[in-house]
Amino acid sequence: MHTFTEKTAVITGAAAGIGLALVERFLHEGMQVVMADIDAVALETQALRLQAAGHPVASKVTDVTSETSLEALADFASARFGNIHLLCNNAGIGGGAADDKSLWEASVADWKWVLDINVWGVIHGLRVFTPRMIAHGEVAHIINTASKAGLLSGTSLYASSKHTVVAITEALYAQLRLAKTKVGASVLCPGGVNTNLSANSSRMRPLDALTPQDAVPNEENKSTAATHFMKTYQHTVQTRMAAGKAPADIAEMLVQGLHAGDFYIMPSKQEDAPILARCQNIQVRKIEDLGKSFPQFSW
Image (cartoon, rainbow, N blue to C red; front, side, top):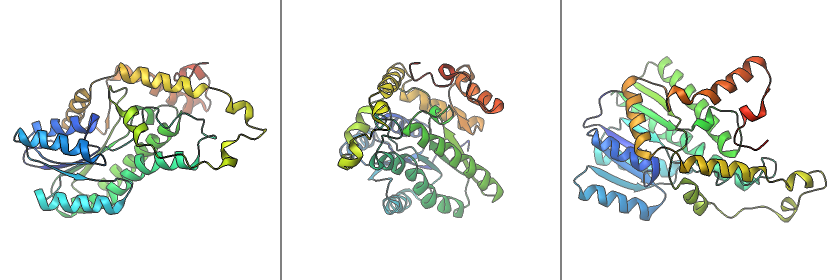
């Protein structure tokens, strides 16, 4: 998709961070934009600001964990601006907010929270919007926001969810081509981005549903429960985010990637070393260098 002028975009997670930067960048491209977010106050504030500046923006409070909510968003967007040409499944949580425990210590509530938003949010978006975008017959594009963490060796609940988003988008790309549609797909894999994602995610995190039995480690896992390696991971993530790119830079990277016809939209190849390390591990069938493969932890 190379032409954006007078086309319509729907962006989830649009009230802050990368999502808001995407809204502003696509408005600059001459698009009409429907902003969706679960944070009603932030969403209204940003939408009113952009509308006051004369931009063609509409907003709809949306919970991406609910397919019914996304259906309401699609109906709203179509009624307001007509055919939808660009979908950004961008809503997500992360920044280490859910990764304060090892995989085996994380509760079902922890896993469900991450997967409901980061994975099912994408699935619901695809199920609701893709048939509509195919049916109108015009050139369109779907962008799923994953993460560079979805291309590196897995480290956490968050990374697990983003690996899934990458795989979903690869499958989507192939199937849209096989079906000979005019809808394309790309996966956005930013590295560190300087946003309030971690704080916002922690604020939205539901109360943990651990039972007393689950909360108390048994004899077999007491020693691992006492470790603090996830604190190292969280510190690394926070440090990289603080030193990361601005959301506007990611939005520009996305637009340039779309113009170039890229599927994997990500930082420059100079930052590919950790991805190549994972590929090399796969080739030799071993994880040979823990420090190189998992630099987020202290070895």
